[in-house]
Image (cartoon, rainbow, N blue to C red):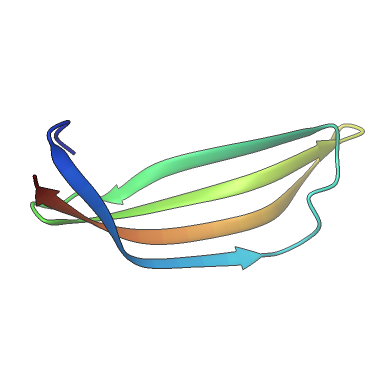
Amino acid sequence: MPADSEVLTVENKVNFLSPAKGQTLAAIGRMVKPGRTLTVCAGDVRAYAGGERKLAATMQSTMICAPK
């Protein structure tokens, strides 16, 4: 979104799937569908422990771009 705009959350949903136990947590976000006004984003959090990777949480959010 343009640097000179306000970004507001229209909707946000988070699913906590398992405890985030481990030596390292990694969060990866992505843009699912950019739009002129609304943009849908998603993200996942994974916990790494002892060579294993486990999905701890996933989210989806709808953002609106509002000019300042």
